Image (cartoon, rainbow, N blue to C red):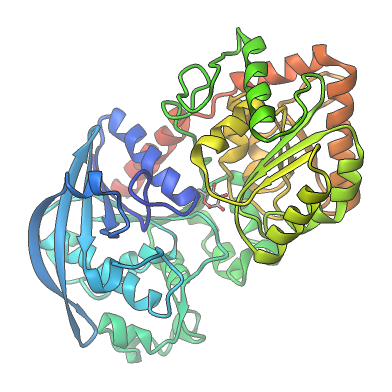
Length: 478
Ligand code: GLC
């Protein structure tokens, strides 16, 4: 099977979040299942020199972005049975950040058009184009409308994956002629399409052959007003073509037995060595080195959506307890500042690392006892899975992928892989933190059972990549 995976980001080349991790690990898992898989990315000049130098130039052509004529160079890099294609245009992709520019609509219009042109020019024959988030969500529409006459394209099936419905790429409806060279007139009768602007994600939802999101619970949630950022009706309307497939994590890069970023490797059979990582973490963070104290880790974007206003509301109370807290992340300036102030007031209990540091992230996954992830909504979430894989028990708000991956502690059955709260409020949050801390202090025997449960759960891509393959197969034969 020949599959094209189109994404705006992909580790280790460049990434800002979970999409970059999924674009890195899912194609690798698919390649192992004998899929011929290519990943198509923008050539962001931010990409480390080591990868840039491995790229080979394949071809040059001009892309018509509406009335504009933009040059495009296609580069290629092959790595561990995945072929990467990079779409180069310095005007669009030689920028400090990946997104957040006034011309993002035009930039990703160019990217989407260039991908289709590249397939044509290089005579590639994908059976599936799997697009991700709004950046590439116009491709299904373009294939069915703008390029409908190209015979080679007619059998291509498209899958759209929504990684976070909050980001939709909403632009003026005139962008359709302006960026894509497609007149608006033929669509005036289709009110759901462009009446309130050109929404790339919505267009993708309407035109892709199948839509997935990254957890079964989130697939249900985004059909409701509370979670859908305005797209609930469209998604309910397409619910027969909507499904949720849980993300996995990369077990090669995230393995407590082999992780180079942690000082003491360990496994489920050798949990004692996990404590050595805790000790190093405490030393590095200038916290008292105490084995018996519960240490809570946070690795996240620091935003209200991730639940950190709730945490700040309760932080004084949390820090009143005999606990330690290590935070790593950046985000809203206000939230960063508040955390920093707390850290200054409680240097023996709380360390706030307002930065981006991949090695420290791994040390927190390995060295902490608990991992706090109180997101207001969470399409899937990868960190809670990483934490569990490292035997660190997550405390989560039971929504989306958090609900689908964390089994809350049941004191009667002594079962679970973490702790959960259902109502997004401070009372529920503090109750679940307290339950976690109590168990840590009072019953290490049960704690060890939970750690083992968490570590033995399968969060690899094995099962989910199979589900994507089945979906591709179904799309091809329909
Ligand atoms: C987004 C979502 C996150 C998900 C990731 C990968 O970043 O917010 O929940 O895990 O995409 O799909």
